Image (cartoon, rainbow, N blue to C red; front, side, top):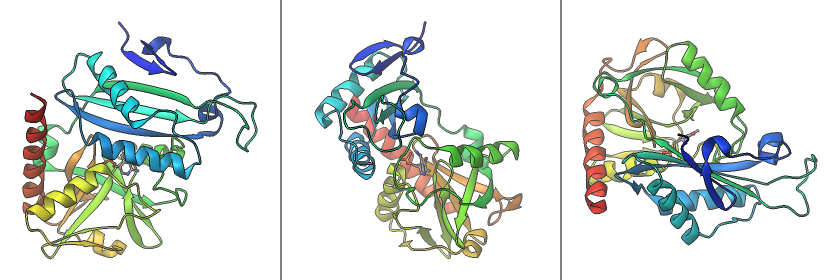
Length: 286
Ligand code: PMP
């Protein structure tokens, strides 16, 4: 039996969901998306995800076809139609179907699509031992703050990581750390937690914000600033964060150990705080 998806006003089996070949999402990658983790059937930080969606839509000058109240209702409805307690809701809005022309169509209705899959978080082994990453030059466009469905560069970079047996590819642009192909990156050096500031070169991660809040609550000194490549490579600890990876320690970079090659003490503190925070969210759901 196929999972249930949502497309333009109706719920239907995912394998029956169809969009036109002229959809601008298909032709130009002209659309934006969100991925919302769901713990115990409770969407995590939903208002923040909806705010980021609005920001992405504003950046591509596409009106939001759904109100926040309606998004909330639709997302809860989609979650209820799936059996898993922990899910990953994917939603996408494109500029809709029109004759192929780069400029926006005068009329047209955005395409709205949603699906949900089981949430896959890191395996215990990855949490305990950390993961391998490689590095590459960040050759994406200059609006990485927009959660665009145009992900060709991210796909090419991530494939490079997959072929190297690595979990992620850490990116450097003009000599500084940006992020990874589908995660934000944190550096620990000299007892401080460092991260690149939220600007047009990185996606403003929802998990990035959670990690900064947890670090502040734990009294960890944080610096948001440009991080030169050499500083990142010489880190005591390196982490990747995202809705599915949560907080994950990177223990080798390009085959070389990061710090002592084991997940560090600050990682363990923040990872534990993250798990406690999640449990608190789940308790609210009960
Ligand atoms: N950067 C990029 C490029 C991403 O694709 C993602 C995940 N969508 C992130 C960072 C992390 O964002 P979040 O914590 O909201 O999952």
